[in-house]
Length: 192
Image (cartoon, rainbow, N blue to C red):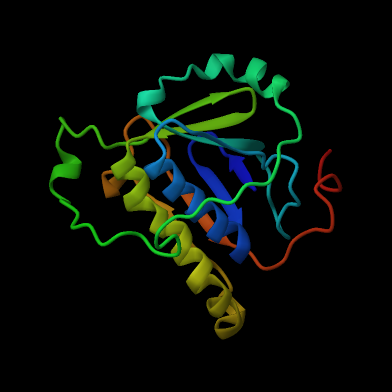
């Protein structure tokens, strides 16, 4: 589930969801002609407080130059889809590419995420490099979150942030990525 809190975004994921999103993040890094849609708004919410506007997510390479204002029309034409399998070399890990941490903070840096909200959907637009370098955040949540909860029953909160100080966010808000192991039974019971 992805929730908009105006000044930041919260992504609540179980292990499977974090692995899938990490893999789709890698797909976005390797497939610049793909628009990757994750319908998340109607998913079951995690147990606990989850107020805020629920969002779907679209990942896309900046070279697509897709106008989010066209999304409602495109989404209306989508059918139920069909399952597909994509082979990603080392999809479970990010590639060992040396990061130039100083370059991330330069004004000329074009490897940044930009976000737009339209039609209850968050559009994450970025370069192949920025998708590749940040996919590991989701994979870390998938790998470390399930083990953290039983070891820390009084502080069963495992999270990672896509933080503004990391040098990945251009025109984009921070994303708090939290592992959750307890979920409500249906996505509709929490709506008011």
